[in-house]
Amino acid sequence: MNKTVRVRFAPSPTGALHIGGVRTALYNYLLAHQHKGQFIVRIEDTDQTRFVAGAEQYIMEALAWLGLQPDESPLAGGSFAPYRQSDRKPLYRQYAEQLVKNGKAYYAFDTEEELKQLRADEEAKGNKGFRYNAYAAYPFRNSVNLSAQETQELLAQNLPYVIRLRVAPHEIIAFDDLIRGHVQYNSNELDDKVLLKSDGMPTYHLANVVDDYLMQISHVIRGEEWLPSTPTHVLLYRGFGWQESMPQFAHLPLILRPDGKGKLSKRDGAKFGIPVFPLDFVLPNVEGDDAFIKGFREWGFEPAAVLNFLALQGWSNNDNREFFTLDELISHFKIENITKAGTRFDFDKAKWFNQQYLMKYDNAVLAAKIRPFLPADLQAQHDDNYLAKVANALKERVYFLADYYNEGKYFFHLPDFEHKDLQAKLAKETNEGKKRDLSNALKTNQDNIKKLVERYPDLKAAFVELIAGIGETADFTETHLHDLVMEFIQKHQLKTKEVLAFLRLALSGQMQGTSVFEMMAIFGKTETLHRLQHFANYLAK
Image (tube, rainbow, N blue to C red; front, side, top):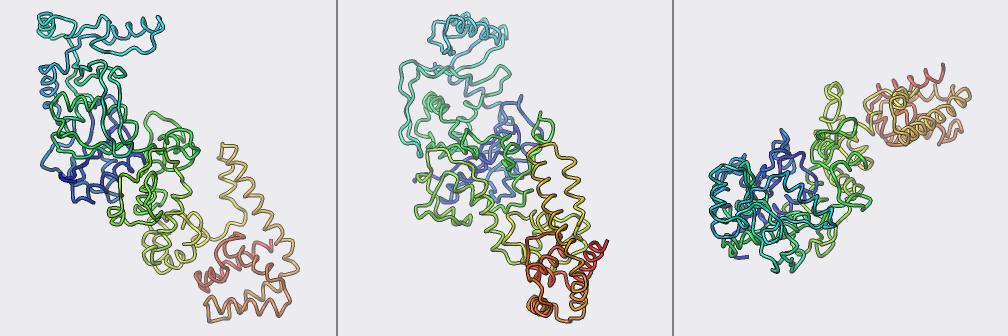
């Protein structure tokens, strides 16, 4: 690779940054850093009708959270500023006019109403392939069909017009794609794209090519959906005489829905209960629960785990290795190892990756990461030492930072043997599937307690004695507590499973989870005795 590698990630501020966009940014970042080049973020906001306030800030914050810091951007600046297309508006007209002067583009004065009527007339005749093309036999009002004098008169009248690319018929437009190999289109399949709109704003096609040329972009790595636009861009490079500066193209495969049925969309997040954005986002023009989608950050994902997972969504190393740091991804990344076929978004795999990353952390590090996911009052109640012990107990059972609280609430709250939380959730739930799951969970918990309540009269004396014995011991280590309870079980010839069930339920309100003796050691003597007595009082009602 002879010339300096300069790549750009060019999102539109029309909403949240989709996870497919994050993968595009990542691949651009990897290539740039692998070749000591520059990674540029350019905001393509030419479509002002779809502009969403706050979207640009969201995009930059998401990239910062992931650690994909650009070398040049609207925030960082750079030698090729400005990096927001709306701030570059004045320069696009001169390039569009240059194409008109060279005979590669033309003025078109057709109104939207005229084109809509013409399209309807053609469809009524059975022509479903209507395209705007200067060489087609349609009564278009443009500078190709009009005389030079007529065109100048219309311009002098300040009649609204657009500038369109002039596509010659019967021409093969070919280019080499780094992922898809040799690609070619017939120009008869194309229409004459609008390059400059009547309000003076450029379309994506013109702004994209002009900016890539002026910013000396060496590689364009973007989604598969832009592949059909590439022949138009190739024609623009030819029209400007910039063939030697045309970047190398690489069109990435789609990220598909978990069921494989189509491209993963923003609203699939709500449908499948998975994040599709890096950060929390409220979907515009959507009401109800589906309007809000929780981001990877708020789920409790680690940025490094997200990048590792995303890198493998369409790319694989030759030795099928799975774990990479960002620096290792930079070293190993190869565009030619990107697949052509779409790849399913495997959320279970993403969860697994995150779990593996969390498990590698020292407990003290995890304690600091867990703290922000606790309710504010609990953050003040528990020190780092306690949270480190909780982290150690749960790290092989959870997938997300948020799970340390959601799955380990018993470490922070006295057990609720009446299951008021579950009953409240069930009362509010409207989804039949979720209601069924909650009902089953509630019944299981109630049945477990019912069985123990029925046995309690026979075990009451023993249980009271056990609580007293635990209260008398000075050694509150796991090993000693285990030995103490086992000796008690043998002395009274009780069933180990039954006694441990009593202890587990008393301590956590659950029948599964952390070891009974590990829980007791984490709680300490005072809290352990408080919980055991709390359960005994409940059973005695």
